[in-house]
Image (tube, rainbow, N blue to C red):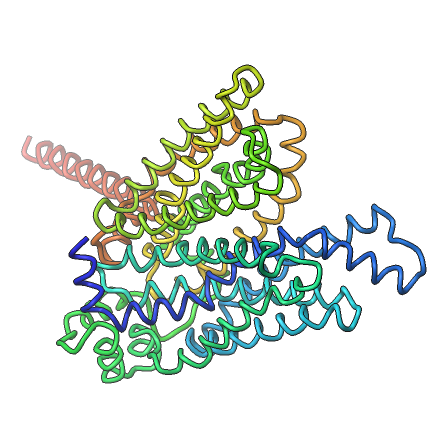
Length: 511
């Protein structure tokens, strides 16, 4: 722990910039996931009021359900668009300039939602929600890439886990702001996005005082002195020539002068295995059962005897627990490594889900069983936050160099947002059919994830991009190596045959 505080003092410029990045980055994503949960009855009532003002009759139940589903799902659609556009925008304008422009969208979204009740138009909430998805999708990619590029190798894991850390902080703040004691009331819910807009305004004012990422300044702008100034501002006033040499060495074979599109990355055989690993890790994270736990938490707390009006506060405790576990992951990742945390997390999560399936099956048989379910729910959230949630993002950042990292996160974002949308549509039907036995399905997915990670995913701790790429090339060029070996064997065979024939000819001549 003492070492952490020492590093914090030495790299205070770096940690300040990461904090500012998080406010407009992954914080926004987490905040918008949870902020509308508590005031949802008031928003539905507002939709009904608007409908009555227009048509003179209450809105039909099916129509209300459709409007609400659209309001929830349009966030994923906006996120998909923002994530898809991130590659072009970052490549053209750079990460810092993109993030500064992205700060304006939360302010516009907050104004749309805040004025919706005054104007009497619920479509403004729909537009604001779509904007929220767009700047969250763009902000996630910028935050992850920016953090990965400004971190020194020894703090790379810690800095990369700030993405998931700010996601959990955003969820927690969304839950707090949505409480009925604050903005979760019939009159104050339109101001729910004020926090999002205010934090983005703070970032808009403060971020210009920080530099762009050093690799971007050196490789894209060709400004070595500017890169050195940026490193001194972030890492302290000392000699950083060794790091500049490492950037040039790690990326000399990547043709840093040109940009790479997502389609070019998909066609590039030298990054095929990295893409498959990234997609696999994202799917493992989404199919780990975390959404199922959140879905069942209300029933679990209700069966444990918590009053219905107090369950929101217990759920807030779950959010706080997840935030603490994300902080613990940040402290452990550079000591134990990414692969250890992912494998250990999924192993213990699988065991926890098996026990939770048993306790939920016996919920009505024993009076103390619901409390076991509550304990297992908190334990699962802790394991998820302290292991796979943070270490997965760090691994995805570290397996790509500067140029392919931008299109890689476009591909990653597409899978994340489409997966989130599909899971949101299909998951309720899975729960309705299997009940709590749906956890068995997630356990099977996690066992497959353990096999995949153990045999395919390398450890990236304390390794350069060149070293990581060399490990992946064993899989990327496996067929080519086999072909080269086969051709060498064929050449040797032909050479031996020629020598044998020549020897026989010489012998016959002598005879």
